Length: 298
Image 1 (cartoon, one colour):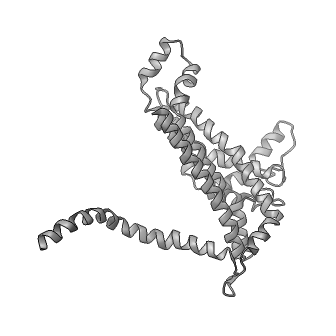
Image 2: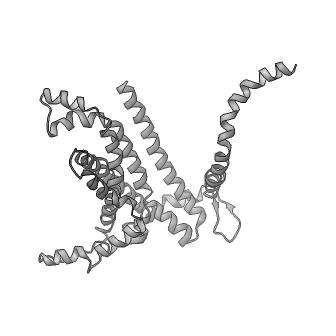
Image 3: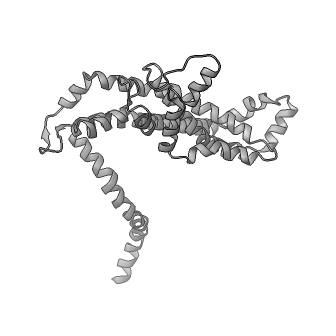
């Protein structure tokens, strides 16, 4: 009887063993990620301000959101951030990776130099760039030395968001360059030699060989940079505080402002739910595009 029981229990034990190893991580994720996410989803249908208990109000927060002018402005700013930052961070790091992938003496120092902004804290980078953008900062002093007038980089509603974008791009170039560099070094040198025989040399070889083979990496970088651009917060908080006139305020900063500035916790959860849906759509697009790419390559 015991032998029959052990023989029937052994396959079950083999299937359960991996999940037992995952159990501690699942418990931590459940307490720190899944439970707060479900609680935030519930609070988005309530009125809650940290003082009184949550009061169920149904879709009132979403109705308020639909008529919130500031929310639609932050949504436009977030979309503009995506449209401007993602193409640059998808293309420029590839060109940079091709540049530092050359077999030249001392090229590793260039790789380190381009990657250095990645390891600098965003707080430090934001403060440094805020000084550069200041009225008496280095950029305006340089312009005045050329006989030009200074530029209100962070105080002009038409320039503030683009000035912050420049910091995001500067900070991300080295990170995505490393991703592309890993892909470039996996391309066999024989392909370039064969391409040179067929007349594909110089810059053309990258268009004929490098770009097609780097499509999975291009897709990965595009989606990662899009999700990062959607969640941008630190540089805006440090450099502009969402101003002037909400011109540089994004969805994440608006969530922070409503939650910790106005103590509108339930309304902040509603805005966060919309942001979650945007990121979810971007993630689904990435997975679908990745599967399509893998199918075409197969």
